[in-house]
Length: 199
Image (cartoon, rainbow, N blue to C red):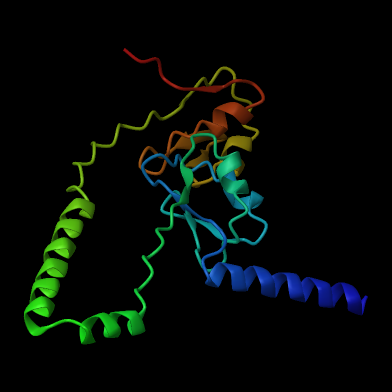
């Protein structure tokens, strides 16, 4: 038993060390794609994902980079963060030696050349201005077929954002909370919920 606990402790420490050094991949949620279905939350093995304002949020301090959340997301709202490696600094000894061997005029020209090259490189690598974000589309709120509804309340229980409330034995959907994920439609045993037909 002690050996198992020790092995688990070493494994957890190794993962934490790798995360801290940036050796493991990190994942992020595109809030504009996320539909708030919360399917990723129970799948995370370390509880790094929570729901905030109807959208999934990943805690970078807890994430171990397993990628399970990205695999289960039905709308591909979770993706891996690309980490850019910083360029290695040149050797200080070599830099000092090259400076000592230069004449004052050569040193000035060399430094001016470095500044120019640095400015050109900065201009090349500068990111383009961000594009204007598209306006969010109106969410389709499911409608109820009263003749099919048996008041089982399943839809209210499984709604990930608590947008459904049972009133007089019938589900009432709050359009302000509803994210249009369609989970209530999928889980209704009598197909009493459906999206409205588009014009």
